[in-house]
Length: 283
Image (tube, rainbow, N blue to C red; front, side, top):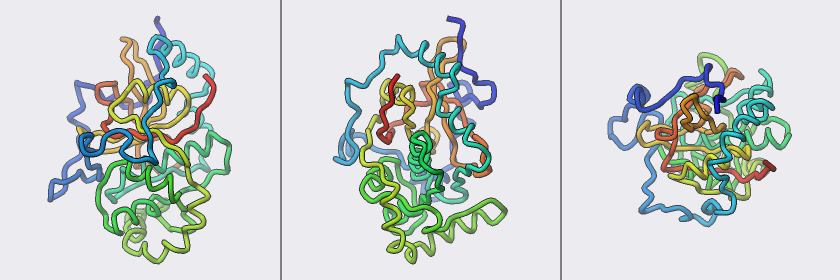
């Protein structure tokens, strides 16, 4: 098959260059400056949380079907990246700078994308309404399933109820203020947070077959990568000209309405922490 995904506008991360994208560690060496703490699958195995159950076997799509479905979605413009780009410049995505909350931002991007696919009104959600209660209002790292578990129970408020950074040079200081002053927003944001709750999630950690099957169903997969020290939201399953599968990931450093992303080959795009908001669509 001569078809390959259109990867020309994406930075490709594979075995030849992945070292360039490793995030430096903080002074205490517990997590990267982005904030991702690797999830230990021995102490926190798949399904450890009733709120985030494992991926059902019946939902796997055979790899033999992947090339056809990837090609169809690209030609029809029905990939998640296509939907995100068509949303227009009025859509503003989230910039974590300079917080250590990538693990939460990736999950909240996933919730915002699910809402977009469902044609709900676009709302900028505030990751601080999830990350701050989990981390006791400290700028600490974590992994995405922690955010997914919390959001599935408590939801996530929009930024009208928990202010965060916006466009402009003071974005970083506002983001830090959203953490440092966060306690004042907690109680008043709870009712609004419940309006943005995903009631069911799948845990597909360390499983690229499940991840690919979900993306083909237009279900985003927030994914944490130990090698990178970072978590991003995976949106598209891809295949390059040599037949290698991979994933397009939406980064957490954009808020200008553009799509800021990478393409990771399967060897680099299999996260040991992968959670997905449930939204099953017909193939």
